[in-house]
Length: 136
Image (cartoon, rainbow, N blue to C red; front, side, top):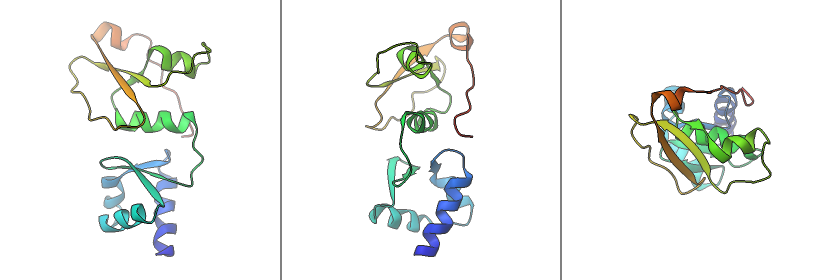
């Protein structure tokens, strides 16, 4: 099992965020039952269906932003969450504010991290979007 853990850790590390989609891992000749075994042993945590995180990874707000972007792939960090990211406020929001296009369907959200979804029309949604590279 140690050899399998090392192999999986390499797969997850090659993927820039410290989390990975279960299907992406399976595409790399990985058996899903091993993923469940690692979860039972406490090596990984399930964020939501198909999204996992290694427990020994350094966890900070940027790591959480990456997880939120994986949970809401077409979303944009907005409002207090964006202000907090750019250090333009002293407020530390207790949930992530995510904007999505009004034609997008609402994604299934996990209990943690807490996420609020806001719907915007084309003009408002597409104005001022800036892509940021966080650790790859």
